[in-house]
Length: 214
Image (tube, rainbow, N blue to C red; front, side):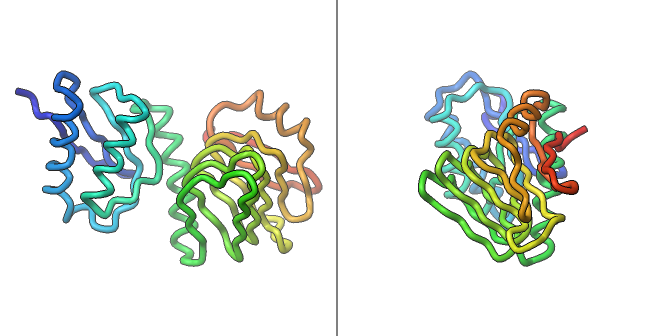
């Protein structure tokens, strides 16, 4: 029988092949065993993950992710579908992420910010989750969201006009860099013409939203 689970590495993370023909319970056991056997190779690793070979429901994907994190020290940054466009997207997101981490002065937040939650950072902040409506992020440096911005985000809060905001998807209530707030009408107008992850930056007295990948 073909192997139930195969792990392949690449520059930005791992690709996990999942056999499409066995029951999910058997597959989950195989995932646990495979990652237990390989755990020493992933100690402290932070990476992008792709699942191939099998279509997963949201619940099944969550169970597999929990199994991986329970059996290894892997920190999964994001999950992408296996195709060239998504690989390029994650490449750019990861390069932004790594550049922040290398400075050793950024804050790392894992989880979705929900209504009435406020996250403040004296440096840059990387959020592994969404910023939901009613939530706020205020950072003196850059803000990188591996998810969707639907709430309010303020980067460069103490005068850094070079700060930027990156997100996989932007539908913010408010977007602010330094002391400039983006006009809501312009945000949605620019969003409509851009697909995929976006970067917001300040040019003069206006915030522009551009595609993260060309």
